[in-house]
Length: 287
Ligand code: BTN
Image (cartoon, rainbow, N blue to C red):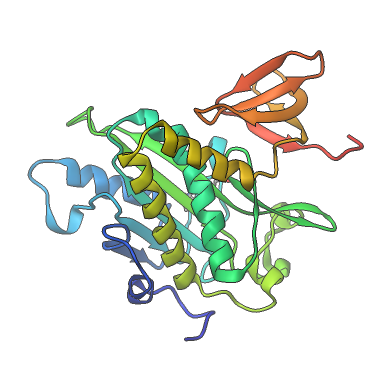
């Protein structure tokens, strides 16, 4: 198969080793945001009188060739040109929203493993779930994950968690829009040829289901396994970082993550502070 070919539900599903993840996929040539579409589909399916086409079960997927309003973390936009990258949203229905921080770590580990299995390249994870590649010009972003939690008005006890993956796959460096060209990187530049997006999507779903099943059926031991797998791939721990907060920025050394997935920072005055959610900048040794 031509690795630069279009996304295809059939090509993804042929490479799945899952029980439920990816068994139902909706593919769009263009959509506002795969996360928004998945949420619309999932909420429609939560109404007692809807079924069939509108209904997406846990493990349901929305894929798109392009997004007109791709969403990034912290209200940023995710630039989503057609035909080259992966924009994939996966529906989870965790029994407890308490799972969310682990799911953030778990998703980063799963996507790093999927990239490794497909291309042999091992990206680093920037806390909580950005994928980075070190280059001579500094670290560049290969991808990111946006988790959105929602409870339908019809049944607030029903938690819907949308996990949206954006991975720069086959967009040549010269085609990145100028506003992100100096920060972003594409897998094809590292591999030296186009990467098969259908295989990457299938590997991502394979790994997501394997980790998610362990988390759901397990306890503290399985959560610790996820934490350790994240630590093994972390590009943040041990680094001097700046935490950007609305009030003020804080600088320190990233020392660890708590069992819940929060980042532990050793501040310059020697004290430690823990951050459940924030934007992190990796500092160079000279900064
Ligand atoms: C980040 O800011 O790093 C997270 C980016 C997440 C982008 C993906 S693309 C597929 C899904 N749909 C969206 O609108 N956003 C996520």
